View (tube, rainbow, N blue to C red):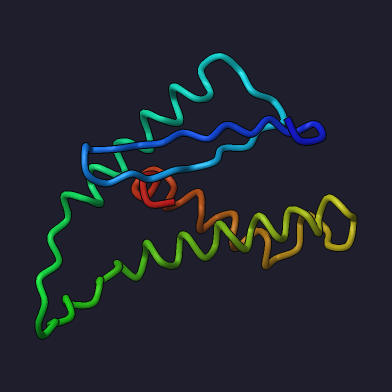
Length: 116
């Protein structure tokens, strides 16, 4: 214990390498360390299993994002911001720009739900 903080040190080893990690919590529970250890072991296994190939690196192709997906995401972010302005009473809910964004989101919501 340190003040109101619980500190637990866990050592991970594969028989050769040892990694110590200190975990901190103000609200520990019985599953905290077992769950954290499980997740850490998974990450460490991936890290130690990763083989770095030395030499020249050729960058992968740029990610191509559907312009409508990009616009839907941008509009949803803007709408969250505008919702705050509406809630503060700084912008009327029936402002034409807000109605345009609302219409755009509703028109594309079903087709692009998984991309928001």
